Image 1 (tube, helix red, strand yellow):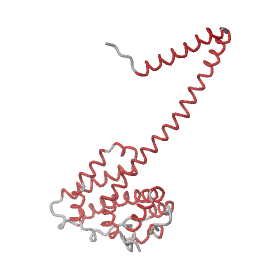
Image 2 (cartoon, one colour; image 1 turned 90 degrees about the vertical axis):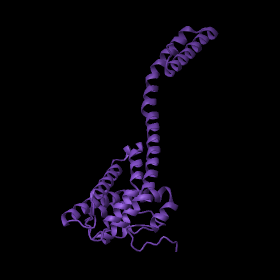
Image 3 (cartoon, rainbow, N blue to C red; image 1 turned 45 degrees about the horizontal axis):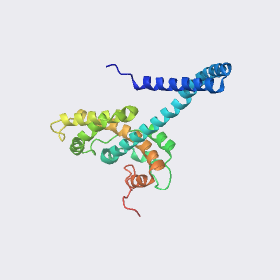
Image 4 (tube, rainbow, N blue to C red; image 1 turned 90 degrees about the horizontal axis):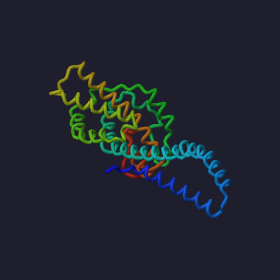
Length: 245
């Protein structure tokens, strides 16, 4: 049996209600010319109504939906940094030969909003150069393998499609995990091979730094209590203390 779509049924009901109203108006008021004039006036204004609904209301609904998706995305990014991101940075930042060049903008204060513009400028001008001898490749391999399923679940999350740079970060992390996993003995590598792996780590490091800046700005504006903890566990601050002083 053929079944009409709900949109068609709704349209028929609304049109029927309009026809009924006009019939009642003609019957009770007995003003056919006035009714016909009103119908034409309403029909003329209908196009403006459609324009208003299409451009204004649809735009507002789209903006609201986008904000909801971004909120979910930021929650996912927060979980990533809590479970993986911060720990990765703690393993990488000490190997950065120029870590001190990030400057005061990266030394956050829990009571102040971070200066995102200064942090971005510092990151863009920063020379990311890692000392491969400081990095414990075996420890990093074990850590990434332990969290591989977690990273896979993040990639499967459809919300990730809204954030290309974060997706690129996850891809860089997966590549590093694969590179480390294929080495049989991470403690006995050639100089060139270790330099290659250091380059892969550096790629992750740069992407992490960019996302970390955005995440700190988001926390300071929306979740001050989470921002306070992030400040006290700041991987870029070698003097950070988690205990509240």
